[in-house]
Length: 306
Ligand code: GRG
Image (cartoon, rainbow, N blue to C red; front, side, top):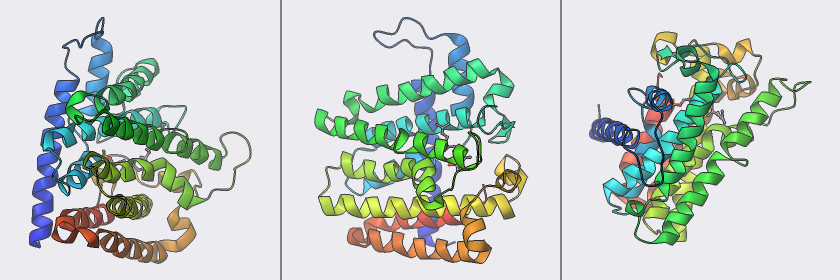
């Protein structure tokens, strides 16, 4: 293991631990001002799907892109927790019978299997709205304009032109609404999974009030990392191990999905990942050694087994 990789693993573990503790606090039963009650069934469901699992890769990207600019860690962790809430909501809704109809997530029964569809829909809605509560809080940044930019970017990454839009294009490509619609895999990926990962990277630039050039560098890096993440996911679906994945492999093939692997072949997809890693490194070059942990992050994303 190289020093950069060892440093990366320690930092990823630390951010996962800190994010877990923060999410537990944000999802506690303690009422916030203007809240009337925190219903137990809803809170238990939100906690079930947000605590005790996941690599916390998205909060890690927020924390590390923020560290490049010396942003206080607590502020970055809060912004990262908001992003993780959106991610967890998307997994809950994606697993529902009306979407992917999955029984397992993170090695455990999916939320609707553990509870019921209505509870799972509402837990997802609760996490989505909580994310926007968190990201507008004063502790994130003293300047309200920074909070506004962070909030708007989160809405755009999560919404119509980002994850939600990508999800509907994906379903249309599976033929859910009639004939299968043609899929532009790269665009679909950029929206469905790439937009949240990219947000994790630009969040640091927003919080750190970076220059335009620095913002652009993290934007380029985030796009390359997002595509590498999706190709790795497509490869895992073909070559992965269900035990490590915490869900069955082969789901894409069963649905006859167009993926990077069906388009490029296994070797072509692996070559594309190598090209993307080079692009990610090159984007980070303006940060010198401060970009090293993010460089290790793109390698982790490309080589992951789960
Ligand atoms: C339902 C609006 C809506 C959107 C769903 C992102 C998404 C859109 C669905 C997720 C489906 C899926 C499993 C995509 C593969 C890539 C992916 C997001 C994997 C899970 O992310 P990881 O590996 O998971 O970061 P952990 O468990 O580590 O957090």
